[in-house]
Amino acid sequence: MDRERGDAARELPRFALGPVAGLAAVLAVALTALSGRYGYHRDELYFLAAGDHPAWGYVDQPPLTPFLARAATEVLGDSTVGLRVPATLALVAAVVVVALVARELGGDRRTQVLAAGLAAVSAQPLAVGHMLSTAGFDLLTWLVICWLALRLLRTGDGRWWLPIGLCVGAGLLNKYLVALLVVALLAAVLAVGPRRVLRSPWLLAGVAAALVVAAPNLWWQADHDWPQLTVAEGIGTDDGTENRILFVPEQLIYLSPLFVPVWVAGWLRLWRDPALRWARATAVAYPLVCVMVLALGGKGYYVVPLLLVLLVAGCEPAVRWARRHGRTWPSAAVVVAVAINTMVTLPVLPQSALTVPMALNKEQGEQVGWPALADATARGWSAIPARERARAVVFTQNYGEAGALDHYGPARGLPRPRSGHMSYADWGPPPDSADGPVLVVRQEDADGIERYFTDCRQVARVDNGHEVENEEQGAAVVLCSGTTKPWSRLWPSLRHYY
Image (cartoon, rainbow, N blue to C red; front, top):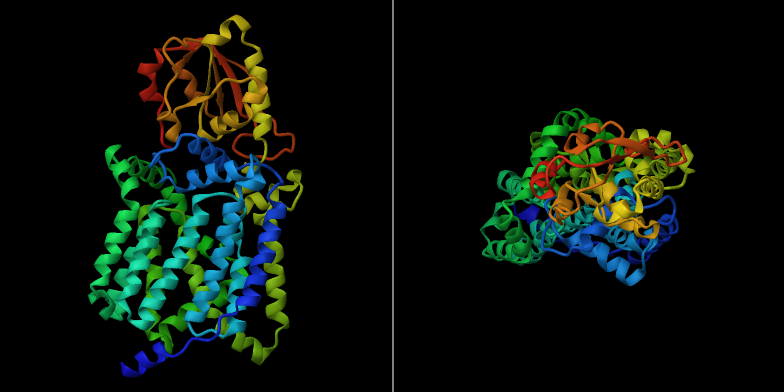
């Protein structure tokens, strides 16, 4: 035990500040240069709308990402480039933290740069760094917590519980998934040690700090009967089986199939290396989080931050292997991984060529066609006689359609859209005096929604012009004469969470 403590407490290698900062700068420039291609993602349009309705919470998420969307557009203007600056900065910060994790595990400057480089070109990090999303800030939060936890485990200094608690609280303001990481790390430390850190009085200080930071959103959720639990249950029910089936294959591709040997070696190193016995809990935390995500029917990308920690741990064995066997094959593997990951996650291809990358990453296609949807809606609106438009309503099936019409509709003379999806339902039904006509925008196969309206006929169809088979390609714009009940009575039936 004394030897283990001595190994853990030894002086860390110098941080490779210059090379890591240079790598981060190149990444930031590349992402910013590509941010203006394609268009907004459906979730980004929703975040923009949520930012226009500031609150301490929303039915499907805490307030941080909508707040950042609002701040970015206020400061940097209304564009995809401006909106995505926070996402780019979050990924750049995550890459730096990855290098710090490598240093914490004893990695020299070369190992730190390798770890940062592999993380920077991994598929899921690139995907969430390109677009504004809760997942991007979740990635950064998890990595910071893992880094701080490693410092706590290595030094045994309980004061690290306080910054850990602050980061957990900030993470809860973005996404509740960070609670899975906390549970897994605590259980792992309890199982394999070093347990002495759990006896520190600073642990309670960390818990208090997390609760204080997260309290406004927790209060909001409690006051609204915890709608986010309803949303999570819906995801597990609707997609749980598919998520469980795809979970293991996704673990192999979320960084890159070519990086799998590195993170497997990292897990083995954390589990077996006597010099890193103090860090063994991180090896245990990964399968624990996997089990929890599988049980909940969650998505495979939830555990990517811990995969990155394993990748970091595997960089030192990878460097040793390359010294013995040569760098040709490892270098070729990295080049191939960069090429594939870039094509699959970033907007580098023409929009008409997205069929192949969408097979692995459908979110690429969700950045295409929103102005076309607004155009089709405007054509449908023009079919309403001018004398009837004061009582007319535009109603959308989902928040992506509503967000697009919120953003692009005013320039086309469209009124504010209404929707029963997610937090749009909280932003209110139309007044009962708006008794028709109703212009319904829905996905191609979602005609069931028309049962709430009367005398419906399709008047337009969405065509994104690039033959991209995303969720809104072929969407219908349907003109109905009115509603089957007044909006105030109909609204609870129109509300849906998934």
